[in-house]
Amino acid sequence: MQLQTEALHAGYEKDTQGTMAVPIYQTTAYEFRDVEHAADLFALKELGNIYTRLNNPTTDVFEKRMAALEGGEAALATSSGMAAIFYAIANAAEAGDNIVCASQLYGGTLTLSAHTLKRFGIEARFFNVHKPEEAEKLIDEKTKVLFFETLTNPSIDVADIDALTAIADRCGILTIVDNTVATPVLCRPLEHGVDVVVHSASKYTTGQGLAIGGIMVERKGLVEKIRANPRYRHFNEPDESYHGLVYVDVPLPIYTLRARLSLLRDLGAVVSPFNSWLFIQGLETLPLRMKEHSRNALLLAEFLEAHPAVSKVNYPGLKSDKNYSDAQRYFDGGQSSGLLSFEVESFEKAKAVVDATELFSLVVNIGDSKSIITHPASTTHQQLSSEELKACGVPAGLIRLSVGLESAADLIDDLKQALEA
Ligand code: PLP
Image (cartoon, rainbow, N blue to C red):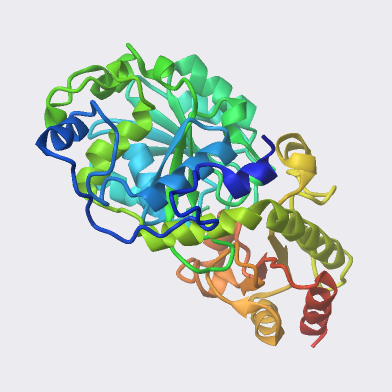
């Protein structure tokens, strides 16, 4: 089935009421038929609902739909994108291990890997996403994960997915990829050999800035990479916390299963059924929205590139952008999503432009239908000196846009008056 059809139907079989909309199963728990039924569910002899921290019928539709869109086998939804990233990594790595990450990462993922994971005994090593060979040099026998974003936020770089998965496969390590900004509509990392995809569902998935959530999707056949692989001993040896279950022996998608039975069970960052329902509504229109976000962003990027007050535009859909060829290679039709950034001459000018816009909202979010503008040097990157800003690719005059679904003509008029004010 085509992605546009799956976005509307995958994962939902109408219940006895025949409801067209997926029902919201707003419940904490589920009644068992009898004690044997309860015991069978706990022993995984039968699959079914136990308690909403572990599973929920509305969330199940969201998980199945996202798995279908990514071309994966199974998915696990979480209460936020950060929880999905943490679970995806913690499912593979433990104290004493390391992970190898692209340095062009979302800020939250950067602090998670560089600081919080360190407190759990997991070391993060960083490579430049444009230099996959650096990643290979950082991998050793304790490396459990190669992590990168397909389309990076906020630096707006495109990863060479094939080069990175080839390295990970050669070394027998798992690739975990954040596909939040590209979405499965533009890019399907699992088709390029990625093992696990994660998303912040809070962005394009909901599409209207309505809810925080995350999801992790596992590729088909992942068990074969993990089976008898000495790096992933906890999938190959009995899990004492689950009456000696050996994950590789279970005929189910094991990466998702272990994350659910161990991490979601014990850490509990579960998504609410209502938020899953909102994400399902969002997914219905995702294919249409991503085309329009990409079309609008390209029009704005072209306008900005031609404007005398703008010294540089970063947008992978522009021929002049260093990511153009990778965007053409990995993104459907070269469509490059709604994120772009541009530079004006100074910190003061950037502040003035941001303040002068009227249609753009000054918000630290992306992926909303409404356009968003941010000035990293005075907000998210405020503590850094101008040298440090330059080093991490965030010059003082950089402005980031998350281009929404308004008329491109109106957005361009607004930027024009703000630049020329
Ligand atoms: N990944 C990317 C690329 C993001 O942009 C964000 C948030 O902005 C996250 C992950 C974290 O997601 P959440 O805010 O849902 O925890």
